[in-house]
Length: 471
Ligand code: ADP
Image (cartoon, rainbow, N blue to C red; front, side):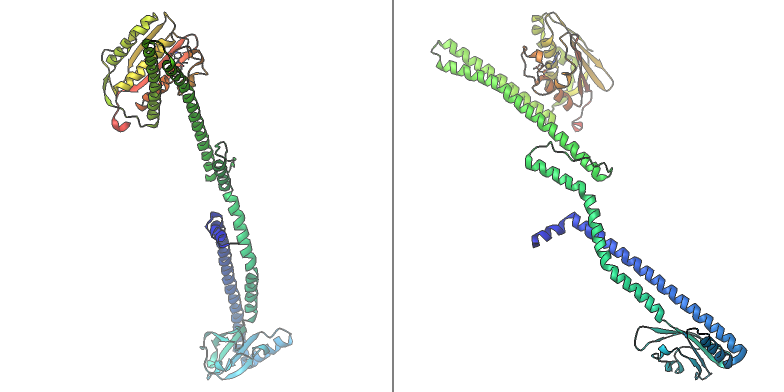
């Protein structure tokens, strides 16, 4: 294993989480053991003390009733009865000189002389340490009549043995606890990080293949990672739609530019090769100019739409007199409408002010009216209606044209989309996308209601007040 690999491993969340899990597990086990150990040690000690005190009481009563003789008799009786000689018993006179001593054999290594030299008080507890090991002798002292001292004690050996066994079990099991801590930690970490690994796999697949079709598998755990993978999938779906939209637009632009460019080239070639009169040459040049203007218009509109959609379109806000603006737009299309014997009816208030970009709003109304007249057959009708509402203005443009199929309605707002039946008409398929982009830039809305055969109604909603800060 190289140093670099270890360094990378150390930085992974998985490794750090495993370490945390293991550390918490091991420390908790340790704390639990220490608590259990302290509890056991204290209970054993208490039990020993209770035993010593009850023995002390027993001998105190014996002494009171029969003096030293009674104590000797009691000890002998116990020995004869085969009871284990576990208690240390000492009787001392008022000068602390031993007058009776019952000493179990294995206690020889305690410094009992120190008791005569005054170790321990005449009342309470004394502890003597063994000369060889950790064991101790715990002695309870009480004073009898005539200042005689009675001492009863017990070796702590059996207690220490038990505690040592307990310690041994723990230290023997510590390796098992460490191994268990790390394996459980690693198992839990792997489980918890599974969605993250799937996320990494998905993102890597996208980075390697360049295809955004990859998705995170559903994990249905209902936790934050489940939410994250759902959001990543949603984001990927949006990006895919955007990329597809961009591709489609690019294809359409390329396709729509090719026709006028081919025509331009053809006309220019004809003009160059032609040995005809100067007049024919001029005509070809004029056609070239017209065609290039069409291309320029198309490119400008595309730029306008993209500016409006990305929010970078700068609106020159001013107070616009809507009736005046509408009258000028209708006037612009008067001849075209007359040409097709289309009656344009208009109903709007004499005075209606709103805040907006006059030229952009003119473009919007002109595009909608242009479509209405363009798609309405000769002799049809177009009606414009304006409703003044408290907060907004509603502009409705109704025609008696062919209408739009339900399936087509969502697509008419797309850039470069042209209805199948509209191919015979002039147009770039950009009018409605520009209308929508401008209206949205004005914080308004535009919608259409249409049925094939009964005409279409385009409705624009515009807020009356629009401040620079709300843009
Ligand atoms: P263009 O008119 O240049 O084709 P537009 O973006 O203005 O592009 O319109 C997109 C499509 O919506 C049109 O090709 C046409 O199919 C449909 N459309 C727009 N306005 C009308 C209308 N008033 N009546 C019927 N169809 C319409």
